[in-house]
Amino acid sequence: MNFDLRTTARMLQFDERADRVVPPTGFTARLTLFSAFAMSFLAVFALALSLAAGRVADRWGNELAQSSTIRISAPAGEVATQTEAALRVLRTTPGIVDARALTLDEQRALLSPWFGADLPIDDLPLPQLIDIIETEDGYDAAGLRLRLAAEAPAAVLDDHARWRRPLIDAASRLRLLGWASILLIATAAAAMVTLAANAALAANAQVIAVLRLVGAKDTYIASAFVRRFALRALTGAAFGTLTGIIALVLVPSGSETAGVLTDLSIQGIGWVWVVLIPPLSGLVAFVATRYAAGRVLEDLA
Amino acid sequence: MIELENVAYSYGGGELLTDMTLNVAPGSFHFLTGPSGSGKTTFLKLCYGALQATAGHVRLFERDVRGLSRDDVAILRRKIGVVHQDCQFLDHLPVTENVALPLTVSGQDPDGADANLKELLAWVGLTGRANALPPELSGGERQRAALARAVIMSPDVILADEPTGNIDWEMSQRLLTLLVELNRMGKTILIATHDLGLIRAAKAQVQTRVLRISNRRLQMAGADL
Image (cartoon, rainbow over all chains, first blue to last red; front, side):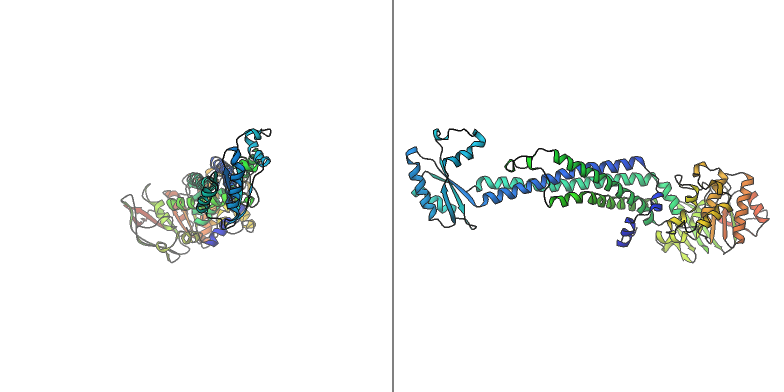
């Protein structure tokens, strides 16, 4: 069967009379509608997961990329001296824009999510924290550690890289997993539509024989089936996508720091992808049915 | 118009038809006889390109079928009206849409040919059954609807496979009258049948040529027909 661009365009043209030559088939119609509905519903979630994971990866990467922390763990009497020594070293280290010791209130704010707001922080042997802001090029962490060891031995440098990298990697992989899921969903949808189209074509072998008897070209016969399945997939996918969006809205949202689970939503440019789900489902059904029709018509020739 | 040159057709390892040569001239009226299973339907299918000869050449309107694509054969088939014994309708469409089906599949607007469609249904006596579904028709009505569908594109050739197989004598005479009328209008007719009464009735009205398939070969029938 010839499937050039002109033929493909003709296949997409609405033709009521041509569509009527194929009898309505309940089972395959319901199967296609349901498959498209379910797959689009799942695709919305996979998309939301992927987009949320991407946002988290970007946020963690941006927020933590240019900051470091120094922890001063020393006996109570030496904390101030060691802090001052560490700050002196930091002020003369290339690649550091700013360095300052956190106040007690700031340290309390950091701990309050875990221990509550009324934490008696004054009574606890907490280390003093120094917040470092780096330049874009950063600093030489190994060199800084050596200088700190010499001048402020109680200072421990944490450049965040050790724990930041696995988190960003995990979020990035989650994003990739989301897109892979969408690809799998599209493939499974194509397989189901192909099966349904095959069943419909096989069940209509007599109709195909009659159409050939009266001079119908294969592209004409295929078009009638292809349009029907593409339309069903489009309809099912539209409802599936809408239901998926409603379900997403019902997922409780939380603070941004909570990560992927409470940030499972579609934002900004992500809506473009959501809107594309129904037409892409229709396209998948179109290609799958066209392939099935080509094979069945060849077999019936 | 339809030419067969040393045509053979094999299926499943066995040869069903062999060494068949025939030239169906424009405006002629042919009958094809032979016992059941002799290959009459297969022969007709070769004549409208539904089957490909395994040897020899079939030429439709001076074009060798072997070299044609399926779409080309479909276009050629629009010049050939076919009436099957079992009629082959789309059971979910009413008679009018079934009769107009050749127009629909060839991209012509059946509404534009509405007057012709009504005249055609009147000609075959089915005006009152225009909106009936095929399963609601009697055997004779189905045959006449099939004939109407076969001629709606004004084809040059009409092939009929046992058109009177499922209908009574009176109805078969009515159908024959329509076919003779078409032949007088210049259409080429080829009818496969084992109904000798039909052949004799036709010979009384129009000049016919009777062919017989015997032992897988095509022969001219004897003077008894």
